[in-house]
Image (cartoon, rainbow over all chains, first blue to last red; front, side, top):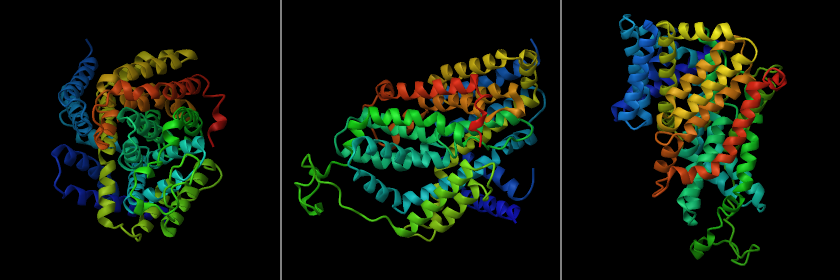
Length: 48
Length: 446
């Protein structure tokens, strides 16, 4: 159960980051979002 | 010269050149940490090693998830107006000393939740800064008050980014959980908070007494109210729903922090997430507010993750191996402590001009010799170097962030830091005691 909640939390955060990535921003900021998003998304997809 | 030295040289050169060119601009730090990691693996003749570059951040992932959830929770509290109303309540406190402590804790609150000083500056620091500005307090003084609150918030539990970074040094290959830091962080940061609040009680105690300048229409009680003839702010009730959610999360965090060894109620991440989910139903909140709130934490989180890549590549290319070769034969008694203290001192010295990335890297390397059995009390002590690095940086640190966010003009780094030396030195002194006598102090780990 807790494992499922963990993946839900990380998936929600990844989606929020994805929305942030789609907004107009400076490219260093986009790199920063991408770095965090890639890590969160890989974990949400259970990939390491 | 051994190849590993050359690799280390290339990695640091890319990072330092990047920091100089971008004037330590925070949003570029993560980009150059990433580039330095790629340059390191290329210099070692290993090509671009995606695996290590992506795997490095995983050491910080669980702690970062808690920070991300806390950022959304804190951002929603700010955007729904809860912090503003809470500030009005605090400003009604009569005792100058108590008001001063409460105001500093108020500025610190978002930093405590997220472990990020910048979140305090963006939210509560901005609110208090505007009040002080309206009263005509000097910009240098405003900067030092907001910087103090934000810095202390970052160092206070439950989340503390410098301690999260240092804890990773204890794990390296196997990610070390950020657990058991609540009391050591609390004991280390609280004295500085009290000292700064009491030393600045005149400024903070007078905060909010700007009603004289307010229009008569704003006055709800006679102007003669109050000893000094100054009109207090009109009373405004805290919104029930947000207050209940805020108190629920705070209670859960306290139970988690103080009774970690005895009680498990899901962890900080879960409680911040539940709090954020509930706040989505509050007035003025919404998914868009949550998206913006998370963005406030993205740059520090990216810096944390790229630091993970930098550390991982340094391990992969043998830089850490050379470091271990030099330090491990001397890991007896005081010599390990000496390695830690030297790396803390070098990190602090570099922080003035190079901001956070290199000091943060040195802090993780300071923890490496004590390995995965590292005592959280010692790790907490070492982490202070990374925290102070952010405070002391002339460019790209807390000063730049505060001056920019609060639009403070003609404010100097030296002037703003003048009031902060004593609290910083007190914290550093406690940190040194933690590093030197961490083992007998292990009762602080709960």
